[in-house]
Image (cartoon, rainbow, N blue to C red; front, side):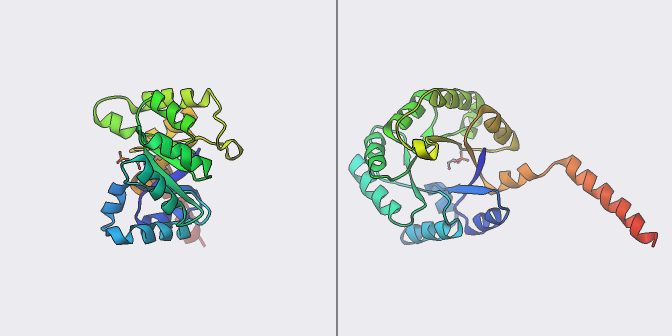
Length: 227
Ligand code: G3P
């Protein structure tokens, strides 16, 4: 499974990229708003992310409402950098927009996906990536991972005639809150987990690693002191 980072914060993206484990970036309007960015700076900000993560897919979300506006905004976003992926929310307007953009070779990440039928329709329309949200199910007392399991199985049962040569459509487990989500997403066969920086750091930690390191350091200090 690949790791994407789910943030628009440039420092977080730079630090995660420096670890050498990053395969992409996802953003959304809320994540951009959290950076304090202004409307006029949105597209230059996306270009900066694309430069930091050269060659890696960077999802920039459209805020358009109609099919025509989504197509126009998708084309504009895709022209910003070769690694831009246009993020569209799954809905009636976005399916024909995805179909059109895919026919032009523009990659779409279909987001806000909460059910297998939505995921299957995203794949049929030509989405390059499909983003089921896990944590938001948990937030309302449901089991996000159960829904993810359904969506992975349903989508992977078929081929779609788009993005085959790139191994698409790929499933991005989104709305990730915990290392447990990451583990289970991998076990369920999701292609990607997009993880906020805080959760990404938690994925690296384990109390037994810390304990082991502390005892190695203490024992090595004894060896050094014996010289
Ligand atoms: O980027 C989409 C998704 O990962 C958002 O997650 O935490 O706002 O539910 P969250």
